[in-house]
Length: 441
Image (cartoon, rainbow, N blue to C red; front, side):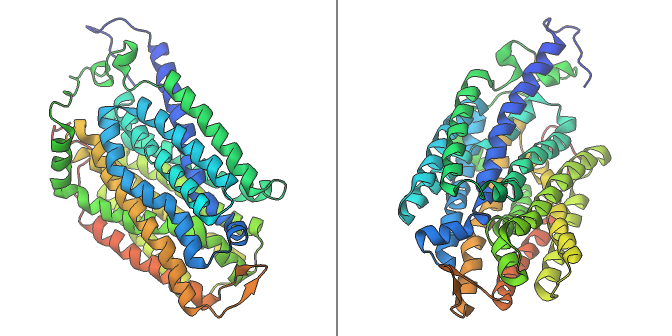
């Protein structure tokens, strides 16, 4: 990034870069824990069924408790990001999430586990929007897609850690100890956020990034946040990308985050560690897809074609997995990787959302789009278990329900049905050409 210092207060570019990437690193660590908490139930699904004696629908509800709270909090998270900023919202969120993770690990009853899971969802719900709001003021707008992809890449490292690596850890330590330790780490991050994160460059005596580029800073918010939120809700161009997140990423998270490992175990005979390798491939594909699409979108100056291609590819992959039986490990590897790779196209929906509203409302816009994503996951996780319970033949092993291939096929067809929402939304996206349509730059 070219830093123009003429007519600006004197400052050290090196100090600015250290501050910017230090803040990014702390928020990214918190975001990695968000992904870990989101995906970990898939690996410990059998342990949870055994510990609490749950059905498939009940297990889906326990895992989805995170998504219920997370979904409800996305609009408030946007408001907090635009008013309090990343520092206060993420510090408070980490404090709540850390406490919830410890409670989840120590739970003796299904009810206590549900409360712990809900607290985790409440705490981590503010991290994503705050991170992307922080990126919008600490990085150039012309690199927002690339930085968003980079954030998703690191975030997915947390998700990958919740698959194969977590399965290996669980061979030595109990699932309870893992979540208690995770809670302690999250509490440490809360303290680091409060001490080191700042909401904008000006808080550390720097000029804004736009000033460094020789442009005028965006004007601050001047009206009440409730009025601004109404403006965001009334912006029709945001809603198509809402459906993209709900239908594509929501479906992917619901399947990979809970049901994929039991599916690979029951239908394909894989043990937990081997099955977690497949979900790790999906998450790796998601990370790579997000990084490549985000950077490529900035380079070509287009958003819509990349999102539309991703939704179509995702829908076709889900259809193949549901309709065509596969046994070959190579075919399975390709399918699971393609689910993640195609889903990565969603990353530029957040850039698109902030480009169709005033820059002062970017946190609320991103929060609204993220609501769709987690609403999809919250709805689909228990629905997946419910449709399988309808046709379950009663088979159990070591206290865990064993579902058949036909049961899982119904669930995967639900995922495919959700994917069609994403295709419809992508087809109606407004192309912004990587510029804010309200300001022209």
